[in-house]
Image 1: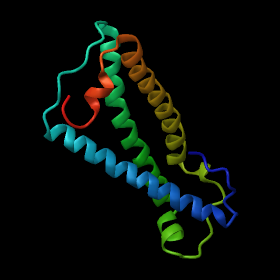
Image 2 (image 1 turned 30 degrees about the vertical axis):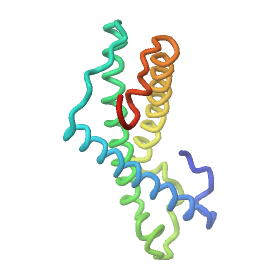
Image 3 (image 1 turned 45 degrees about the horizontal axis):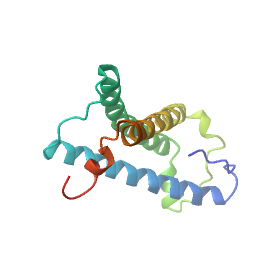
Image 4 (image 1 turned 90 degrees about the vertical axis):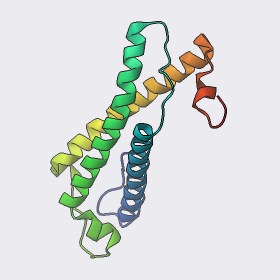
Length: 147
């Protein structure tokens, strides 16, 4: 999410607050998902009968989790470096930095966001491929209850 509101606009703090809360929630849910994934039995991996696609699928799943963690880490690093917790949540009254681009973590945050978008699109394409082309009922397998 690229916030286009200038840092001098008073609404920027509200936008950052929402962005930081959403990012924190995504981090918590991702950590919970990873924990549950390691603590519960997993079904056998789905195969496409194509070794390359099967390897791509495994890599995409790993990278999705890893990049979400890197995204959150870079966001936390940026927030701490720019003293955002005090400004956004603590009401310190300090102005926001003139430009977040001055912080190295911002570059990482921006690059990882683009990589995550690409991986999410690839993941969606894979799900559609399974559902429409292979018709292997993968979506049903991922749902709750009897599979």
